[in-house]
Length: 156
Image (cartoon, rainbow, N blue to C red; front, side):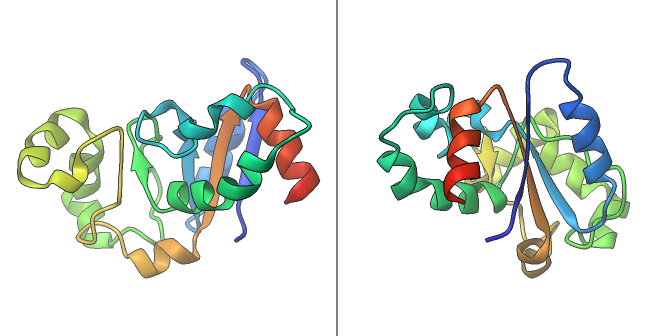
């Protein structure tokens, strides 16, 4: 699976780079997805800060965690400000994306749609074209994650 990782520390330009990449209609940008309690990346947090000699936990679970992350959206993600290939134009025009992403609207929608519960959720098929989403380039902003970055550079 192809994906892009933005890595850095605070005040290093990671937000700016994420904003630039998010201007493409063909990217699906995720902002610090490990911050959500429901993220599988959160389960790999032990290896996030430290480059361990034994990274078998990452070997077993990294690819699945990235794939899951590339197919979900979360509270920390940036609003979509340009048309995206994977967001239906009518749902963008009607503001359905903002409803799914916004905490107030989602609070109401969660009572009807359990799939929108938690800090991360699968993008609804009435807002996102999931086939096109699978074709988009996932961009993951993972700040202060040197252990993960070393792992990806060495093994992926």
